[in-house]
Image 1: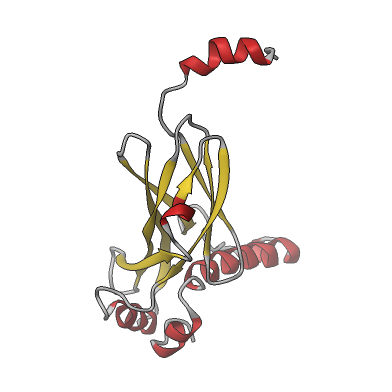
Image 2: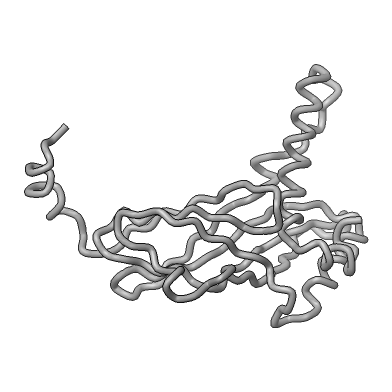
Length: 192
């Protein structure tokens, strides 16, 4: 380990004069999409007030997935709260907006749910601006059927392993759909 004076003399000058943002999803059982954001850089960064929850579903009659994009807003997203100082972590909460620019987006997902669709993938996309003013987009995968498939041959697993596999898959799927506020899920019959 280098003494602090050697670190500040040799390592610190090698860091770029910019922000260095890392974003992690925090799995919570509520409707909020929670992110932990760490700025490892030497200058501040700013999170975007708007983001998107993207749900891809596949029906039994279609081969390719259909995308449903829901805009989300930072909760209490004032400009001061969106700033991430250098060397600090902050938690941000986003929530799917009740009013969408395309008002039929909830209806479309509700219709897809009635056609025996299968959740294919769920991602959360958020932007931030680094100190130089460049916009960066981060896409966080909340669920991907290719990564977490429902075990087809659960009968070949022991009862405990089978139950755990199905439970893990169910939580992953409901975690994604659960980010749409309950009144909207109920109104548009997204999940019965």
